[in-house]
Image 1 (tube, rainbow, N blue to C red):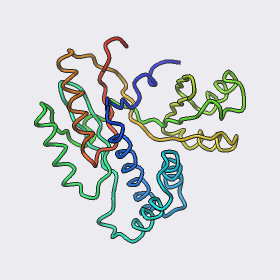
Image 2: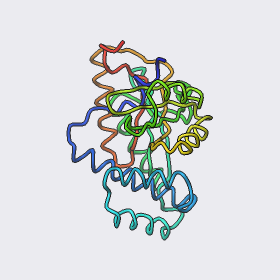
Image 3: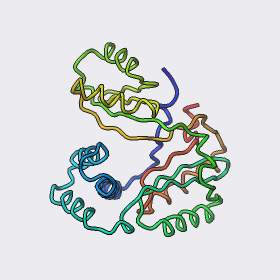
Length: 241
C-alpha cells in the first residue's frame, strides 16, 4: 500500500521538549472541555481525550478540575473547534484550532499569515486539496496475531493505508469507515488511540528558500496557544520525493 502515511499530519520541527509537553497538555485539556460541553461524559470523544490525558501522565486532579470547569462554564465561553485555511507560496495549509474566542484566533492567524507572505483563505477554499481520514495508533505489542494476519484483517475492516515501524502501527481509514474500524478493534480488545486528520491528496515541491519560509510560518503558528494541529501539502524533505 502506498501514499498517505508518508505525509500524514506533518508535525514540524520543535526542539524545546518542555514547550511540546506544555502544548500537548493544553490541547488535551481543551479537548476534554469541548467533549464535556458537547455531550457530557458519555461519548467517545470524551473517552478518547481521557485516554490521551492518561497516556501523557496528566495528573488526575488536573483532569477532574478541567471536567468540573467545563460543566460550570457558560456556553458562550467554552472552547470550540475552529478550522482555518491559509495559502503561502502556493502551499495550502489547514490550521486546526480550539478557542473560546473566534475573533481573537482568526485575527492572530491572519496577522501571522500576512506578515510572512501568506493570506487567510475563505472557509472551505482549500479543503478539496485534502482528504479527511481517521488515523488509528496501535502498539505492535498489543496485536494478538501475526502482523501478516493483522494486515489482512484491517484491510477487511476498511483500512486504506497503513504504516509499520519498530513499535507502532498507523492505520489510515476513510472518514466514513472510522466508526466501523473503531468498533472492530474494540471487539477484538486491541488497545488503540485515534484521531481525524487532513491528508493532502497531492504533495507540492517548491524551492528550498520558499520551503524554509513555509516551515518558519508553521513554527510561528504553533506558538499560538489556540493552534493545535497544522496540515499542509508541502513536500518538506526533498530527499523523500
